[in-house]
Structures are given as C-alpha cells and as structure tokens.
Image 1 (cartoon, rainbow, N blue to C red):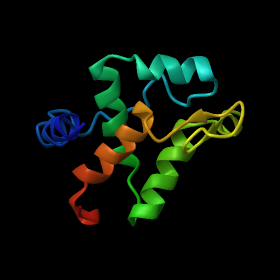
Image 2: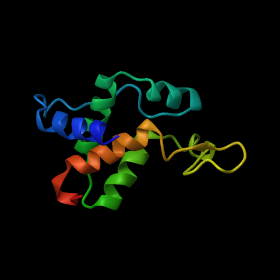
Image 3: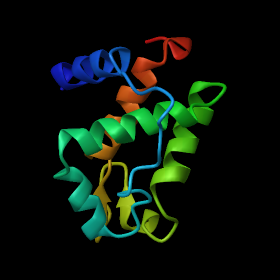
Image 4: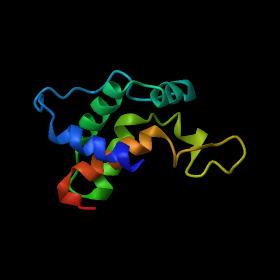
Length: 114
C-alpha cells in the first residue's frame, strides 16, 4: 500500500495538466456495482480521481475529506457501508480503493502534512 501511495504523490508532482481538471465520469458512485467498478478501474481513472479530489481540496483536513465524500458518493449508497463492514448486510469501507484515493490526495497536499 505504501508503494501505491508513493506512486500517487509522485504522479501528482509530475502532473502535466494542472488546469484541465474535470470530474471523472465514474463519479459520483451511486451503487455497489459502481463501487466495484471503481475498485477495478484503470490507474488512469484512479489518478484522475485523486487529481480531482486534490483540485476540490479544502481549507483543512476534515473539510477536504468531507468534500471528497460529498463529490464521490451519493447519499443512496452510504447506508450500504460502514467502516469495518461488521453489521449485517454492510460492506467494509476501510480497505476500499476509494479510501486509498482520499488518503493519497491528503498525502499529496503538503498543507495538511503527514
């Protein structure tokens, strides 16, 4: 996982299209099927998502994470997930690629530190 996060940071530093940030077509994720599609998405889609999250930013860490969730997940999907997925019928969120994208975004923004 650390290798992936290092790759995210390196990709963000070497990004050659900083002014062409668009919301990826895969967002907002509104169904479990779409979440599974994001899990298997190409690296380009993943890095475009990280770049978009970085673009929407936030004034502090809490606001940045909240904005990422608001932009990426629809309200209809959130009842299907809990952090650990221990409740019956719930799926875990802690190890989802979506969370790795948010974490990579936060790491790539030096304002928030590590």
